[in-house]
Image (cartoon, rainbow, N blue to C red; front, side, top):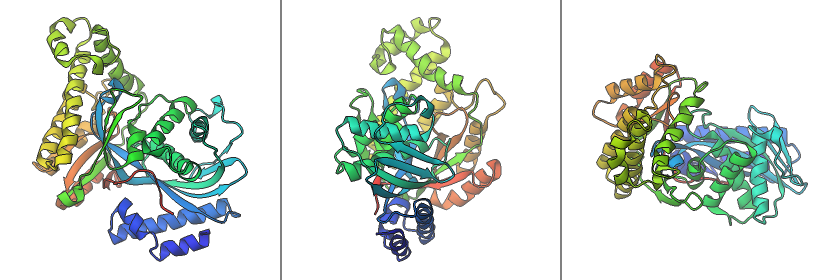
Length: 427
């Protein structure tokens, strides 16, 4: 259908069933999404006025649930896709060009006759697009062009993986249209990681892309990083009476590179003591027996962070099992243990270089005052600054969000839901 027909179709509730799966069935939410999709279609038409048949794709952001700083040690992690997403209105072409205009940004144009690495594109979205196209081409996929207008409400810098959502979106578009969906969810995630590592120039693990691509609750075992074990779990927190809330504490991520680098490097120092490259290769019992000898050979914080890894790696496994069994009480017990371990052992709630800036500990403390014995709260993502995550009873959500907004500013608290599907074609 063309843009005019698409807008009429959306207005008449033609995609309400699909929207309900992605965002929930609340009429206010559906009305907002209809308006959002229609605005994207109108913007597409303004940007690409001569295009006829159009299609819609969507890919979600993600929230880490368990396994804080375990993936870079080839450990286990649990994360979930959320209802904030990147959406693309797309028309396919035969001129060998991919053109992507993202709301608020300039046009990215990739000539498919040149899929080499461009140093000038590193750190830019055009590098991701070219890298994804190049990877599909290396797989023997005959790629054609397309024109896309994208909008995203995945918060940049929030730990919700806006870049992985974009990568999944582009990968899904190509796989669906030019590859008959043969790559599939897991391969699309690997393609996104490749593009980010090689063409965008940012070293990253596979967790973000995998969750955005697969959707729902996703447990990943990275012992074999080339072929990770991926398990999808379904648990309906809506039916259980809880909302997932992410609060942006407005802390700056600038000048935190040393803090982020120190976590994996210190863990690897412990691994090297045992002749290994990462902690997953170290026998857990052997590590704990060697702590007295480790003391003085590596710094104390490195030992504490290694203790965190072994406990957190096991907790991610147990959390996934608790969700699979529908044991919410057990899940929350493990979740609170994870929160304590991140605070006391991993020590990623604030930067020691900025000891007076403690937005995350403050947010967690106030959250616990509001929630009391109900729900649970912890640092979200890499830590040191940024966001916290909380599972909040629905009858306390309005009050909780108001308290967080009062503390960090209007709109700081985002009330989310778990999205059961990853990257998809809607129309």
